[in-house]
Every structure is written in structure tokens, then in C-alpha cells.
Length: 518
Image 1 (tube, rainbow, N blue to C red):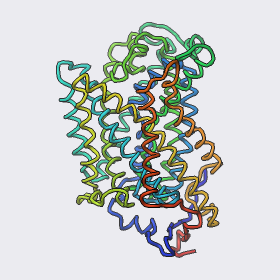
Image 2 (image 1 turned 135 degrees about the horizontal axis):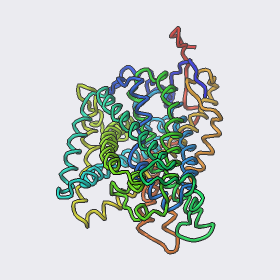
Image 3 (image 1 turned 90 degrees about the vertical axis):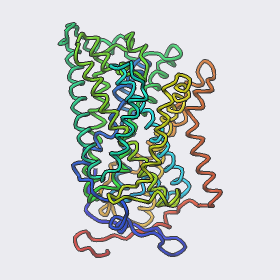
Image 4 (image 1 turned 90 degrees about the horizontal axis):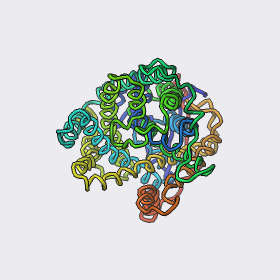
């Protein structure tokens, strides 16, 4: 990884004139504040993606593919995510902006792609907010099944709604504290799983690599080698959901103090986050619990007891810790719901700044928080109340199933933006010394990653075609793809936009120490 000290100011001319101010000017006069401290940003980059996707969702993948398939899948998708995050970080440190992902696509690719990417990202978090609110109610229902889920949904809904109207520096401090707690919980759970594996639990059973030998790669849907491959692919698709939220740092960067220095430093956390929090986590999970454990196989993904870590701990004879993990899961959910509204509001702000959403979303309060965006971004949270009735809960499950494809499309858009950004850099002869942060093997790593991300996007609904065609699975798996295609084509036809050529983007470098143009 390379870190450079040159400062670059970016401009894109239109019709022979510069219609856009440089990002350096936006940084000073933009409506959003730059109050997130480097310490807070580092913690947010660590904890942004640690949620129910890992602590609960990994259980279904383990049951489908087995521990070896799960480990390799997380290692594979984790490698892809590293490239995505570093690509995003390079663009963000080179030309900081507060427009979210849509800003990079508008500048480097095509406004139509920026429009689609921005609304795709908004919809992903607007929908997943309702899922987190529901999960909060279901977890508390573990202790109080006599109280309607809607009561707990309302409690969390009101809480995170109010927190998002605070100044971003206070929001960041709250999320930083929640992140520290989440990391401590994961460390406790991982150590406990290692103790269970080594025979230190009350049942005194040493498992070692037994489950890797007995059922390391399980067949899924069909038998034989094809079934084992499908089992691994099921783990790949689930791991994408588990990693979702990692790209949130692209939004956080818009309110980061001294982004050209903060972003390169905080980006290096991605190795720890993916290597320890995820890859190591699923590795020891596969040692501590059998993928054919009856509690794991029959668990429901919406139940707190579906967590494979809880099942592993309770199956070993430990009595108190499972309740602690269930309680700690509430913090994971609170943090996720809190950031859902934050991301929605900032994304709407970015879209409005690029003219892809009504200008009313640019309205901020005295703390420089986009208030209209916060209100609008929280509206789809009302979908959580659908789970108070069984018939509506079925419809809700279909809606939330679309989240995964929205998430992987975010990765696709980031890589498309980076590849075009790299072409512009080369076309204008920008020296690597003027780029504050750059990953090894770029842009080749971005091309390879884009290939695999595209494959995952189009085959994420593989199970809709196995044995017989399942039209409901097909719709929920691909509706996001169709929606994005329609948004891109519709925007291009209506506004007659064109793809940005590398020659259309101008750069000027500035000496960091002297403050003069080079």
C-alpha cells in the first residue's frame, strides 16, 4: 500500500467551463460538517459491518455448506471486499466529497449511473432498517413473549430517530462506544468457542477439527460434487450479506476531519476487520459446532436463538453465557438501526446535491444534519409493523430478501467508478506521488474483483433454478438488478446523458506545504 503527501484538487469541466467547484472548496463550504475525529472514524470502519449478518446469518450458511465451505467462502468474498474498500478509499482520499457513492459515479462514469447507485444504496438501508427494528423486537421477545413485538419496535424506532438529529460528532461518539462493545462481545464469544473446541467446556468434549473431517463440505440441494459446489456457493451468497455495511465508510468519509490523512490510516483497518472479525470468526465457529446440529438446522433466521454461536455455547453445557450473547445482540441491532437512518439521510443529501433528488433534502439543522433526509430515510421503518400479523410477515420476508442484491450492487458501482477514475488519472498524466493512498496491483485487482462481483450478482439467485423453478425466489433475488437497469436506462433516455470521457475530467495538483498550484 502506498501513502503519498501530494494534494490533488479535482474539477470536471462541462461545455468548456468549470461548472463544479473543486472538492477542496466543497470541503470548506459544504453544508455537512467535518467533525468526525480520526479515532471515531477508525472505530466506525471496524464496526460498520459487524451485525446480525455475521452473528446470526452465518448459521444458515454453515448448515448448508459445512465449515470448510464457509471458511473458504468468507476468505474469498473478504478478499473481494478488501479491493472494493481500498478502491473507494483511494477515490475518497484523492478527492473528498460529501455526495456519497453517487458523486463518484457522476464525476467519473455517467450521471445515470450515479442516479441509480444513489437510490440503490438508499433503498438498501431504508429496507434493512425495518428488518433491524423487527429483529430487536424478536430478541426481546425471547424474555418477554407476552408483549407484542410492535411495542419494542416503537421503542427502538423512536430512539434511533432522535439520535440521528444530534450533531455528527455526538452520533460518531455513540457509534464508537457501541463498536467497542461489539468488539468486546466478539472477542468473548471467539475465546469461548476456542475453549469449547479444546474441551474446556462443562461437557469436556474436545472437538478439534472433527467437524472439518466429518462434514467439512456438505452437498446442498443436489448430491455429489455439484451439491458440494452449491453448498459452497450458498456460503458465498450468505457471506455477502454478512459483509454488508462495510462500504458505509464511503458515507462517513464525507464528514471526516482532514480526510486526506484520516482516510488512508482508517482504511488499513479493513485487514483486521475481515481477517479477525469475519474469517477467523467463521473458522472457529466451524470448530465449535457441527453443521448437522439439529438446533442449527432447524433454527429460524429471525430468531435470536438461530445464532450459531449461541447454539455452540449452549450445546457445550454453558448455562449463563447464551443469555449474555442474546442480550449483547441487542447492541448489534441498535447500532445497525442507528446507522441505517444516518446512511439514508446522507445518501439523500448527496443525491440532492447532484440534482438526482429534490433540493429539500439539502436542508440541514443548526448541527448541519440533513433533517428532511432523516425523516424520509426512516419512513420505511414502518414496514416492521407488518410483522405483528402473520400474513403481513410473509410479505415482509419477501421485501427483506431483496436486500442482498442491493448490497452486492453497491460493490459493483464502486468498482465501476474506480476503474473510470483510474483511466482519468492515467489520461491526464497524474503522478502516483500526487495520490494520497493507493493499493497494490491496481487497477488489475479492481478488474478481477469486478468480474467476480458480476458473477455473484447474476448467480445470487441460483436456488431459484435448482430442481424446479421457484418464481418467488427469482423475483426477490433479481428485482434489484432489474430496478437498477431501469433506473440507468430511464435516466439516460430522459436526460440524454453521456458516458464521461477521461479527457473531460481535469486535475490540478497543489503543493501541500506551499499551498501553490503545481
